[in-house]
Image (spheres, rainbow, N blue to C red):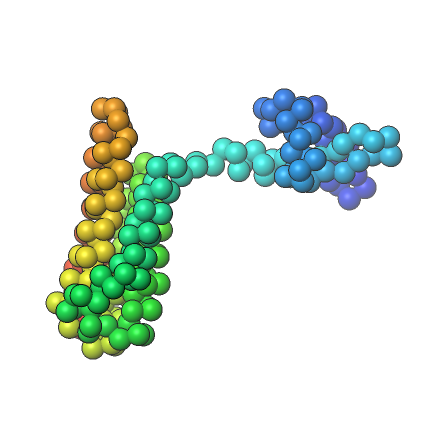
Length: 211
């Protein structure tokens, strides 16, 4: 390890690899791909700033979303896009009460709902109360848009339930293609957690729309 005149600590390839818990060849490959910042000494040896390596360690240690939950979100997004493009939504009487402004606003909130769902699927239940608070705030925003756009509350509820059904169907469909009892139990728990969170949206929507 070398300390520069600026106070920064620089590590050799071996030291960086030990800190990362990786083989030096892997760290060298990352550096060649510019995935980790590095510089070369006058003798051609690689040096890595300790702060950069420690940041990489934090990134590697951070929890990664379950690939299945990402697939689920993509599936729901696909269903929503199809509903918008193939004219399915136009067949529902309630959809006619949403003007362009309301539709755009609902679409933005829908993306936030999917983000909330993704975090719910990957949460270990320690933060469920925080997610519920976000769901309540999301419901209030839905309600405010409903009120400002003069959309009947009943139609706003129908719209929410329609998209909520797409989410529920997506979870159940994905659970069917994942075999094994452990996976079944996992997705049942995930389904219940998503429902517990999204159940907070509708009451908040109705309350805000009627205020």
